[in-house]
Amino acid sequence: MNAETLINFSYIVASILFIMGLKMLGRQTTARRGNMISSLGMLIAVVVTLFAREIVSFQWIVVGVGIGAVIGIACARLIKMTSIPEMVALLNGFGGLASLLVGWAEYGKFLAAGSTSSTFTGTVIVLAVLIGGVTFTGSLYAFGKLSGKLSGKPVMFSGQQFVNGALVLGLIAAGVVYVIHGGAGDIGGNAFYACLAIAFILGITLVMPIGGGDMPVVISMLNSLSGLAACAAGFVITNNVLIVAGCLVGTSGVILTIIMCKAMNRSLANVLFSGFGSDATAAAGGDSEGQIKGELKPISAEDSFAVLEAARNVVVVPGYGMAVSQAQHVVRELAEMLENNGAEVRFAIHPVAGRMPGHMNVLLAEANVPYEQLVEMDSINPQMPMMDVAIVIGANDVVNPAAARDKSSPIYGMPIINAHEANTVICLKRGKGAGFSGIENQLFLLENTRMLYGDAKASLQGVVSEFKAMAED
Ligand code: NAP
Image 1 (tube, rainbow, N blue to C red):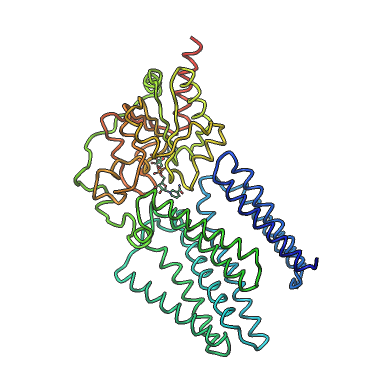
Image 2: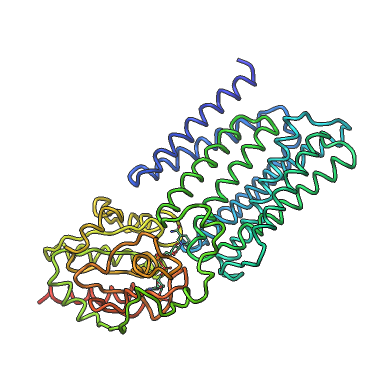
């Protein structure tokens, strides 16, 4: 078997491991193993690639791997779980930049050799550069929004879609000119740099009008684009495993984007072009049809205990606040106490609760909450009127009834967990803070809702102490 055959055979093994790993990531019980299997696939792909003839300098590769490993380990250790979305945004951006650089280097190679690229190579160079460029600046902008360094609100101006349309046309025109000239001469060079510049600008103008609760969709879309850019880069350097890995990232990103749009009952076009919450009156919760009037009614940990002690069906609705206060372990402790007290406890999981897909599942798995207790939104909602108590732990947008009742609300139409239908709702939060989308939540004003103010972990510890005191008596 010659080296080339061995390399391609190993690439097939790596690709199979990627696909197996991805499949296993779909279930909580196998996700950890799936991650390891995909990582093994990537290790094989990287090591085998080092045997490829085209490797020019191993010293630079070692330096790159060293620097990358240090930054990667530091990020994995230091970045808080709640900051993962902005880190994912950054990583998507770097993925796009890497593909762009591959395309750029290939253009440089033709230039240095004084030759021109074929129509196919020219096309994939342009695709790697334009998709990579859009992904890079779009992801950096999304990182700025998610990390709070830039305003998270949608930025809209008149004629915005016209500007974006013109940029797309410009990009296509520059790409076509580059391909026709095979990148040769001033015309080819100018077309290449025009592609680069327009792609950078388009990345920003595309993400600009998106904000609030729509940002997760943007992140998964940029993730998908980074995969497609890698796929194009794979064609540029004819590396089969890069093509496969890029396709897998691209398609899984598209699937996740569709799942998230469905979870919010929005079309992708609506997410990309409508400007979430840009209607100031709606965002401010203006007085409109379907709105609930009422006042916030606080409850103490002792009284919450009294309500919970009598409950037989309890549903816990976790949200971002549970992640912030790291309350998952106390939540599990409380759930065990409720079960020992004769109640049936379920955890209602909304697809976009928290700040990343599967955020709540990961936290609850970390606290060893049995998977069987986790129920998806569509399954729990019909049972909600039978629930004695719904404990809403740092969730806000995902339980906002305005989504179903208030036509003027920017989240109108988004499916929510119907916590408001439970007999009693106990909401744990620190104060009057709005959710991620910045809009008011009328669940807190309902007649059957009580507010248990404070850090979620401390509040739950208070309730757990009451249960412990009862057990000791
Ligand atoms: P949310 O709407 O962001 O609300 C979180 C609530 O937690 C806040 O109202 C806050 O109120 C409370 N909170 C914060 N820290 C707390 C603490 N230490 N103790 C107790 N409460 C605390 O959360 P959500 O209902 O989970 O909704 C998720 C939102 O994020 C959706 O809009 C979704 O679209 C968006 N998003 C999701 C993803 C994803 O992939 N899952 C990614 C990015 C964005 P106080 O300040 O008053 O405490």
